[in-house]
Length: 82
Image 1 (cartoon, one colour):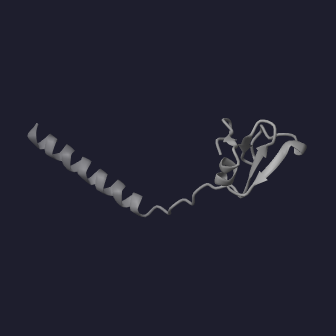
Image 2: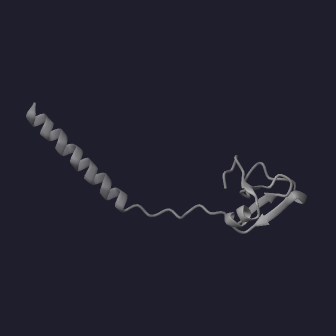
Image 3: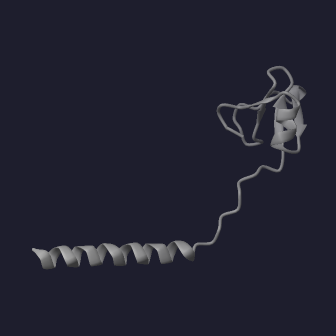
């Protein structure tokens, strides 16, 4: 029984060490940033360009950054969560 516990602990330690090594060699993923955002002039909500809830073209306003949209008084879309 004592031997089984020691083997189990050793296996857990080795597994954790192995997984830690794999984590160190992963390539970092770039942050997901959109090139621009689209605001709705009527609702004051801004969206990702790929959002299915985009307003009609005549009601759209373009923002270069998320912060620019927030500073203009727009709130993020609850669907695409920009």
